[in-house]
Image (cartoon, rainbow, N blue to C red; front, side, top):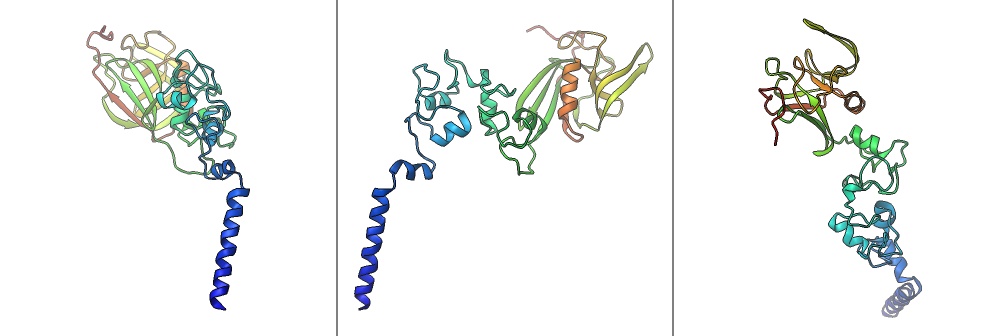
Length: 267
């Protein structure tokens, strides 16, 4: 009797499995596994709908004769033909180019991937994960001041997000080289000394006592030459950007060599 019961159970399981195999659509089963690629373009349907914002039923979304998967793998935009790179396209117009969005696992077609009320752009620039509304992990941020080129680079997780022209300290009053951090943020500061008076200057980030990254409205030599007594002079919009997205404690590195003749060397 035990043998017959066991045999009957096995037979019943075989029938159930056979029913599942033939009754459940294979496409649905594959989709449950997250590997369905309806248009056979090299991207799963899930990737197309949640990340790349391409058509899962059209192997060539932008109609340029290249498969979406091939374009993505090669760094080209699946939304824009004419050999446009993803780094040159911002499909959802959120301020992050498509290559940056892919790097941070944000959707190319959704300005707020994790639906937390903050745009992907604001989250990345502030050092938050744009693809998760629950994680407490912060993305690393850093400011690199290059005295040789008179440029400032803003980086998130080591990726350059912005690059601004600046004017650092003159040869006899150079901006100190080294590794520092944002010590405090002051919306307005009066810069007054021997031979100069610049009151009520907006957007100031202190990285050493008496040394700031700040707006300079009295010249337009940014990226061309040194101009200051040691601070890092910036255009107002650029200084406002850093003031908005930097927190106290974010690293500030000053590197390069101060141009001895004030002007950046020609290449």
